[in-house]
Length: 386
Image (cartoon, rainbow, N blue to C red; front, side, top):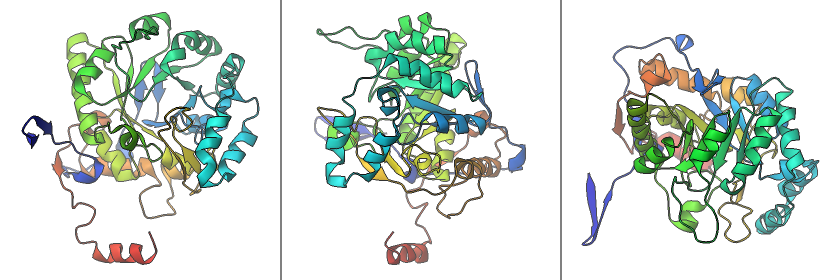
């Protein structure tokens, strides 16, 4: 349904996680009997959880642990891990910097050049742990870095920008051809980010195997405030999932929809899958893991931009181990731990045995879902300063 914004402008209503709810199914299923496995072309995962390519989250040690637990972590090839031989001191400096100086410091630290030798080295370090390796690069360097990553043994190659399209107009530089890129490497290419049906369909036609969905929903991202662009994640995921389904009917190939950002709690994760996601990419929740590179600090990929920073450092604190955040036991009652258990429980209540079945779950518009009847909880949180 379109709404009138003025005499010359109409707009669709879009929805985020806080505005919808899942309707229980007519049958319920034992959560222990639910299948969460996920396949990205030839890369198979036990759980459909991907750690975002953010320097405060993923280093080689974190990637190894995420892989051992059945998920996938994406290493940022434009971050400190590939700019510095030993990034520990840099990460410590970022963590200890006062808030009023953090953006200037990040801009300074990220002026060090990316070293191609460190790209291969980091991939080999992750592969040495016996787990799948995924890396992320900006589009400008994708063609040059893809062969390096493949030769080092990488399993997934992510090309990520604030907004990516299959067509880009510029008179000053050559645009990356995703069709050429996907045909030049033997590992799956994931592209992002995208939020609309038509763009998603065009990107899928280039041969990518996965699509990241989300512009600006991340906890550390300020893109929506700085640029004014973005679509709430439930609507964005649903639109891109429709493109996936149409592309599969037309070509016989399924492109994975990966909802990227905006999920703070287990309920948000469940709603992302019910909206059509095949997997989810998470940053801030994993930044609170003991193993996270930032040790309780998190900042967006566009935060160090020298011209127009679109992010900030946030302090997530450390809540527990990555295993506890994924599988429990939870030490907090806010839904930010035991994400796998929460997802399985939601699927069980909705009568879904697999992610594919869960994508058909009925949803309702329900802006009061988290506040209805919760007066005492709200009062208690206000009294605690939360």
